[in-house]
Image 1 (cartoon, one colour):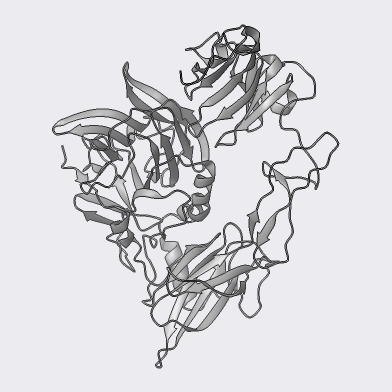
Image 2: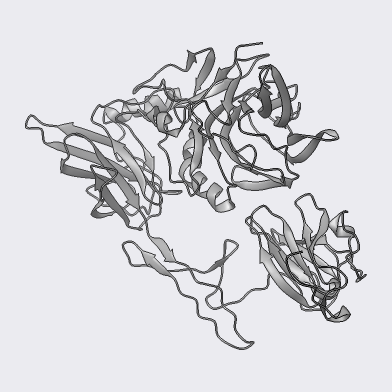
Length: 571
């Protein structure tokens, strides 16, 4: 067995990662920083390490594998402390391939008492993985992406793991249970060798969820809880160093709460386009060399681009707007001039450019800028400066309203940025004509017409309460059908109730779809994905856990108006 490599660096010490000088690109959609340092160098082979991006959740721990990167690095791989690092879209990545590797271990609780992973209460692990294999052929044997163990002295107990099947077609989460190792969830994958994929694993003892490249692909049962004092996460292999992933790992993050769809999407808005580029290719280096010699200026402007004729820069708009190609020069009198390019974004949209010499201080607005333009800033600070872009943003969203039939609902929004502004209402990404209301479920005919069809093509029967979970799934109390219905991506299914109105909470302890409800009239979803049902005539509050099992959490058959009563609190 290889001697394991234990990584105990917390966020404060890991901030040393971003040391790329000169060509420091910063994707900007909100207020993204472009740090400018005066040493000039062009990154080769590995791209410059990607700077930290805004996070709605505060990371407990991260590792980017870029500590040994330096400006102008040309090595395609490095060997550090028995680990092999490969060139990546963001500095270097951890290579996990071969029959056995030195295990890369992250303790849930490090030696200083800092919690890296909330292995008892649950949280989220997020990382990028670039396989050396493609789905279909696969890694040839079960490949371990993550393994979590409880280690005390010489004793090791398996808790749970994230694995890829030998053919590379399935990603599955397994956990230790009282009945042995069981599968918690699985998802089909179609991965290609050399392409980076973003993986987000939400976990706790009550449920699990996996996002792949920004999409929620599976939800399942919980995993074994492990006290942080003995918890150890192994990245890309088993704790023995075997069952390797056959892949490179990059930008590994741990969070103390579940990430929502909004959290996941925001992160990918900043990183996905850069990750898609992969390491710098020889062809790309050649193109940069040609451009620096002045042979390719102003030759690839797309027709219709909106740009300043004096400042035109070759680019193709689209995707997030970002700052790139920052160059600083200093004359004999210490006067600093900075040039920077704006790329991506939308033609004709003005983005506000800000600067500061101190990240802890105030930002100063400079002027509005357009994509596909180069801007020159004179008399800049002599040591260090930061630049940020901010596009037009919605600062106040419309709120929910209840109106009588035939009444009028007025929705309004507020925006920031440099105008003029226009607006477009959308539903599920589809443009709506102004003032038009849409139906998301039900065809207008009372009844029950089955599941697994378009929600607008099915019948409901006196739908009452509704709720939406963190993944935008819609739950409907289909009262007279004695069911709870779920709408996901416009498809309707039943998640609780068999259609019979048998009294007294029939079906507790079993699958919710086989249980009886009695005129359910309310639903709610908690942060863990548990569904709660106001089972009206059964005088109960029922709970459907993420594993699909229904139980009663409040009430019995002797409450309510049917049986005369209220029997008090505190019991």
